[in-house]
Every structure is written in C-alpha cells, then in structure tokens.
Amino acid sequence: MKWLVSLASAVRAGVPEPVRRLVAHEMRAFGSLGRWVARRTHGVREGDHAAAYTGPQTAMMYGLLFVAVVETVALAVLIPWPVVHRIALVLDVYAVVMVLGLHAGCVTRPHVVGADGSLKIRYGSLFDLSVEAERIASVHVDRRYPQSGGLIEFDPADGGVLDLAVGGQTTVRVELTAPVTFVRPLGRRGRARVVRFHADGPAELVRALDQALTRARTAPSPAPDQPG
Image 1 (cartoon, helix red, strand yellow):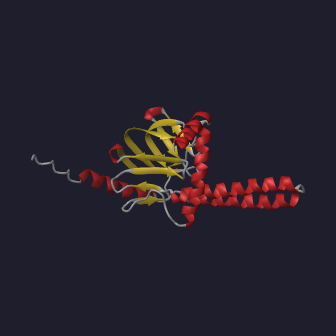
Image 2 (tube, one colour):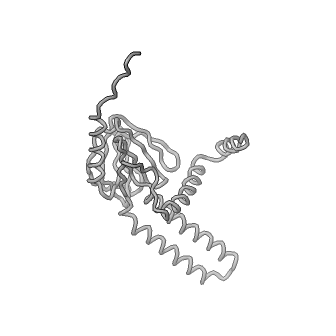
Image 3 (cartoon, helix red, strand yellow):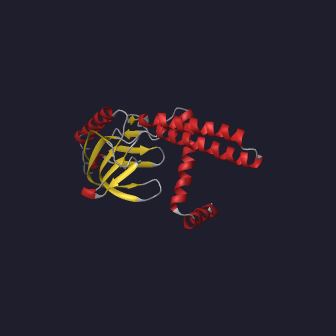
C-alpha cells in the first residue's frame, strides 16, 4: 500500500490541481451514468428532501446530444481517411458520453435539505456546498437572472454573494449567519454570506428547509449526565 501513497503524492506534486479536478469530475460523470440507469441518488438519506434543478437545462442538454450525434454521422460520411475518421469518431462518442454524464450527475445529485436542517447545494459533480443548520439565517424564494449567464457568479461585496445559476436563473436565496467557504469546479475558493441557486420547485424546498430548521431549533436539549 505504500506505493499507492507514494504514487498519490507524486500525482499531487506533479499534476496541477485544475487537471486533477477535471479528471475527477470525468470519473464521477461515468459513475453518475450508472447511478442514473439504476435510478439512484447520491447523498440523499431517509427523511431528507431532495430538490431537482435540471428543468431549465434539460432541453439544451438533449439538443447538444442531437447535434453531437448528427456531427458524428456527418463526419463518417464526409471524412475519407480511415485513421482521421476513427479519431473523430472516438472524440465524438466521448463528447456524447460527457454530456450525458454531466446531465446524469445533475439528476442524481440533487440539492438536499437534511432532516437536521442542513442544506447541500449542488450542481452535478462540479459543485457541492454543505451548509450546517446553525449557519442558516433565512431562506426564501427569490427569482433572479444573473447578468453573466454563467454557472457560477461571485460578488465579494457585502460579505460575498454567490450565484449558482441553471439556465441563467436562480430561484432560492439563502442568507447565512457567517460566511462559508465554497470551491469552484477547478479548485478556486471563495467565501460567501449569501447564496442564490436554482431549484425547480423553490417553494417546496423553502418550506422543507423552514420546517427542518424549526424542528432542529425547537428540539429539546439532551438531559445532562447525572453525577455518579
């Protein structure tokens, strides 16, 4: 086992973190495909509330798959050189699998409201932010359309506002009692005190989180141990 530890240390020392994270994301994408076929979710326990967020992007994902398949067929007809054709075929098939894996990751890794009032905000295997119940000050439905149109937009002003948009929109706003650290897909870190993200059913997520927080905050404290 020592050689595995040495190999892992060598990889960490010799391979940049963004490259390592990209490879890890791709491996998780392959795993998500199997989980999608088996209709299983990741990180959802009994009593938790799972909230989907793929609604705004599903049509776009299937559109990309259609374009990739059409491109594969077109290149098979147009490219006369067998070697180039095989390389193009491999690349096109890989692209199709990655698009499917990205979407499968989003389907099988939903946002999760824990029974203990915690909140897990995710985007497939690319983004995962866990917030403990005691860090959550308030949550409410708040539909917005970030200007950048990208997946992650961060404004460090006012303690830090993080937008995790799907299809160019966010629908839930969570305000925290103190900043939390988040990690971007390629490893860059930031600290946010307000997180806005998309959920297909924002009202249901907010209601489930409010109820979980109420239960967690009103639960009786455990009785102190009696002296022997």
